Image (cartoon, rainbow, N blue to C red; front, side, top):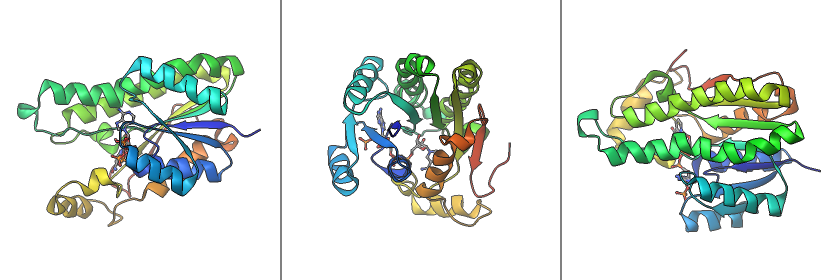
Length: 240
Ligand code: NDP
């Protein structure tokens, strides 16, 4: 029987590429999303992958959503914490709402999703968790105090889960993408994007599929001994 994978924010951008790659690798995939029903319907029509709507920022909604996925597709063996948002502003202009929205989605969202799934993974003695952090969680970024804090926090969660999960057959790893050509990055002004690309040694943005291939490897049986690690996929832009 195929393993079940749940991808948060799995209907657009990097998450969509991850959902598709996992389906192609033989997993039964559930793609969660927040509110863009049109994109989700189009995604299902194109891929046949089931979508499930709830906000990762809401703990109770996550618990209910996960139960719905498990009732339909079986226990979640693989969790990809991909959903994320930006609310950029220089620190002196950053509002408490901008801070809180990003922390609630990008950081608490990882807790909210992992916590209800964790006991089942422990019982079944198997689990794969991959969290999509960011290069800006590693190095910080102008106008992203909220985002960088959330993504750095994701790395702390990952390293701690790795230590707690190892003896139960659970691995937790993170990927820190550099700049990837999704709507999130295409939304920044063209001049800013050009300046971003000029700082990438590879001379181009990454693709969602390149991140998806990292995920597919990390959740595979071949990656059983890789636990608590961070893969930097950024075209040579930053080394830890
Ligand atoms: P997109 O904005 O293209 O897609 C985001 C996805 O997340 C959508 O499916 C969206 O759902 C979903 N989402 C947003 N908020 C929530 C929520 N509260 N609950 C559930 N789902 C939610 O993002 P990217 O593909 O660019 O980014 C994916 C991840 O990769 C993020 O965590 C991002 O921080 C990270 N990342 C991206 C980089 C990049 O260059 N693009 C670089 C480094 C990291 P809906 O469609 O309903 O809105």
